[in-house]
Length: 346
Image (cartoon, rainbow, N blue to C red):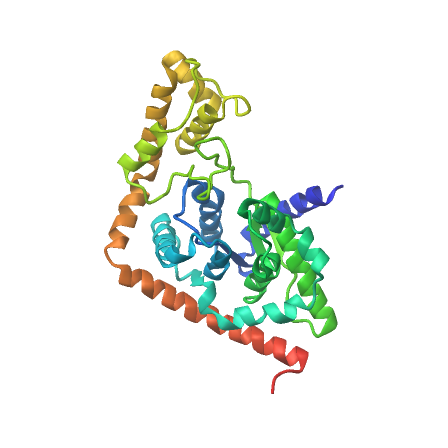
């Protein structure tokens, strides 16, 4: 059995174990606040976080603002994006009593873990990481030390709170393996401080952007959760489709049409082929109208709650303050254990 199949099998076992004993798990999840959260985030990660929350699993949700430094265009607006993300989390139903929401830059002890962790990996291991390769190719810039060591930063994010479960898609499995390697090497060299976290492979679908590529802030093809209904409709209307009037689901040869069908399907809970059959020969105009209505109806409740929350940004700041305090308590305790293990607790 190959390694991915083994991980999938273990993931199935973990899913049942979570149901039976949620108190045995602590989850670390999060994202880089490089722009507004969009439908891809909602279906790709927020839905899974809510599922774990309902199951009773304690979670730490990191907004990795320090990691935005690798994206120079986003840094001037990082505060706006952090606050926007918190609004979306709360509007979606994240409970700050059960899910600790915090920012990377506010937890100094977490970042201090990076130094001993860096001593446990080789340069060759860092260069092999697929995310480092992809980010470098997309940036068009020289490889910075920050980007090269990105997998080690993620390991610190997971291990500072003794996270033992990380929900990920297949593409992010190398990060979990790197974290496991770092935890194992630290425990072997010094003392057993860290768990070796396991990956919970999510079955959430990949949401295509409006141009058929992966939905991404950097591609400009995303439907942000905080858009107004009119903004959503305009973005969808500008989607490039094709001249063929009959609507069919064919992602390879009709990316624009298929992306709209996929988006509508997720929001309506239907198969894209069924929606295509229903529209038939009515053309791309009818498809765009149906998709805009589906998205706006689906997000109506979320946007209403978000709008109410946005009236009191002091509450958002208070959620972050409480989350940062909790994360600092965990990080300070872990760093103290690390110093004791290494003999540097003077």
